[in-house]
Image 1 (cartoon, rainbow, N blue to C red):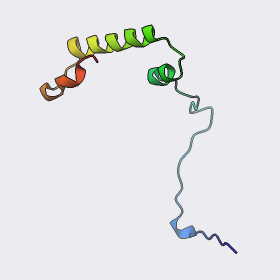
Image 2: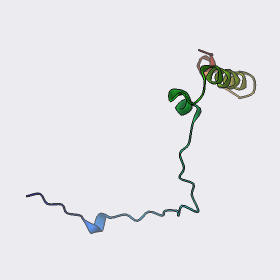
Image 3: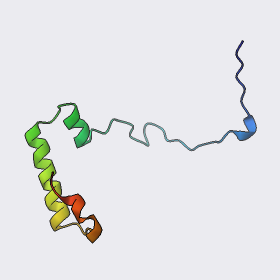
Image 4: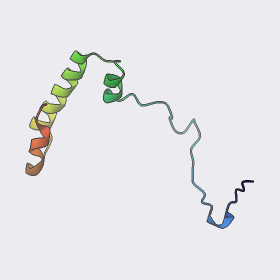
Length: 72
């Protein structure tokens, strides 16, 4: 026989939002779209290049992190 118990003193109450206050729809990130072939390889490369240009020309990047902006 299995038994489940709860300690009511340790319960926590969290504020939640109704579906009208908070959008719970799926977020289709670019990586998600690429992994599930919802965008083409060409679109993926274009986005990657745009991000690289932004990171190397517009975004302030710490000198120790510059190597992370190299386009692979």
